[in-house]
Image (cartoon, one colour):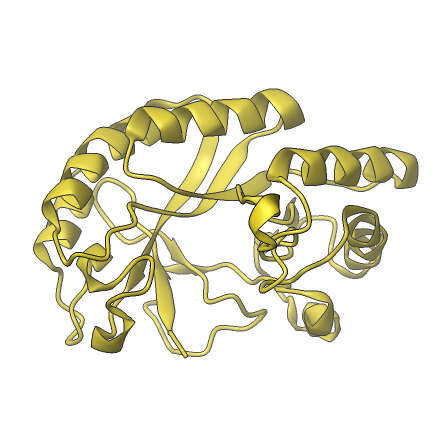
Length: 234
């Protein structure tokens, strides 16, 4: 089992965190905002745990069979249940459909088809969606922004990039740093990107996964790596 962390920064300080749960597992500085998530259909009972948070993240990669794996029409119907149970003051962030290759069998459909069907059903039902979440794994900053622009053009809502990183399994941080230097300023300047989060692995046995430890911005003692220092400086 691989354990990953999503670590979040603005230009000068840690801003917020999430851990794919509706309640935070670990204690953290009170100034660091915790953002809860309803990961999948099995997490629906956790909605009652939402108290005082500003945002709620929706289903994780619902178009992937190995993730929350929810058809868009079902997701829209369940979204109405979520919407009715959380306070109206809580901003709702859509399920995070993400790019994939349906021909390989890893997913039910491409992200844009999933979003199209989800929002069509939501229009019928009256879903409230304040932000749209998605993920991207590429080492090309222009490709990243091209993808995010396409998502924004489709959904016409602010984008919350809840996972992004440069996949590299050769333990070579140089291309990752190059990507980060190019991508983060683009994300900061974008008028339609609401928030973003770098996705990393900090466990040595994760090396060889599609990410691996070279994407880490913190080492196992919790100190910033060179990549983390760069991230914080941008």
